[in-house]
Amino acid sequence: MSTTSADAEVSVAAAVQSAVAAYAQALDAGRNDDIADLFVPDGVAEIAGVATFEGRDAIREGYAAFAPPLPQLHLTANTVVTSFAEEEATAVSDLAFLQRGESGWAVALVGRYDDTLRLRDGVWKFRRRVTTFQP
Image 1 (cartoon, helix red, strand yellow):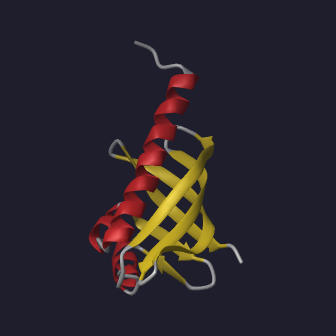
Image 2 (image 1 turned 120 degrees about the vertical axis):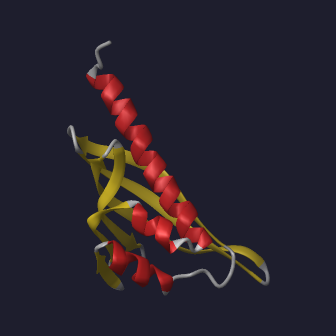
């Protein structure tokens, strides 16, 4: 069975969306090991204007500072794969970060993810994730 370019594009888009969603779920639950495992071993997580973590150990340790003290949700939308090749893809996603406080859920900030992912052992993992918050 041959794979068409359209089939490949659909497959890559689904895999990228899965990585984006897994990251949000792990971040909201404070599962730093899972976050780190979503990156290639020498991956980079950059939070613009805040910090840059290089490598899984640094990502795991760095994200520990962001452990949620209150219930939170990272909602990602409008994920678009902007390019892909056999083993690399780039994508952008919009995000809204919500926290639940005494008066209920509120949008705390909005931003964008700019991602580069690599195919490793059949799984798409982040090579670089840049998070930028909108003013």
